[in-house]
Length: 119
Image 1 (cartoon, rainbow, N blue to C red):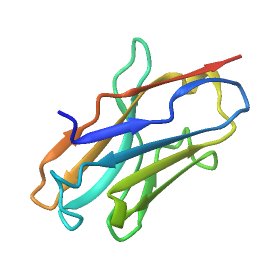
Image 2: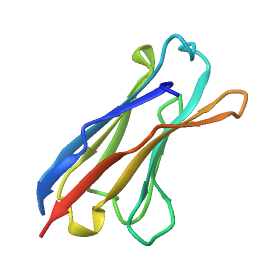
Image 3: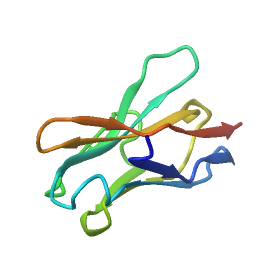
């Protein structure tokens, strides 16, 4: 618990923007141990799905539904990943979870942050 701390969720109108942040504890993760950082989301009544992830070297993957609207980035020195979400739609409403995968292929999840987009 507490290895990943998420922030930035909230309520926004359709067309608006939010920025999510997730910091991996430096007391738990060395700055060299994290390989992949990413964001997943679970909408009501749906399965959790990948939103975007970013490799340590900077390559990224996005769900088709968010391409062109969301941007993932990371600061390796701070063990932090960001998700800039623009042109938000009501269907983006979900709990967003941060996930890290270490070089040893261990997965860690954050507790989630609620994003609600009103129409």
